[in-house]
Length: 114
Image 1 (cartoon, rainbow, N blue to C red):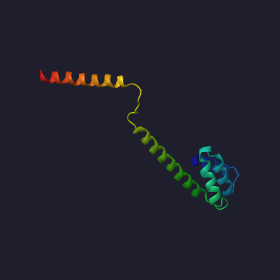
Image 2: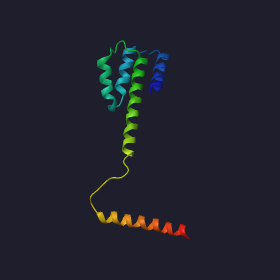
Image 3: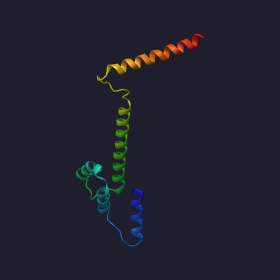
Image 4: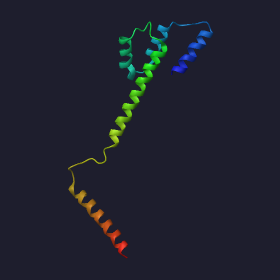
């Protein structure tokens, strides 16, 4: 996103239209999706947007993006760790599964004995 933004800004400068740094920072903050609103609010309250360099804003946003991706990866790993879900519904199906397991092990045992 930042490289496209920079390309557009540089093209506008070549055409004679330039924007102050403060306006560029505000344009980037405005175009971020709703999921980024807490971060946008934090930046607006914590930093002086009139003196905030564009590079510092970019660094802050990239750090936040990396943190969000790390949290997503941790959540996915936690969800994958659940192997089986316990239920108290039907005990006959458990018995059928046990019988099938014992039968297959017994058949394997007989094949190995021959």
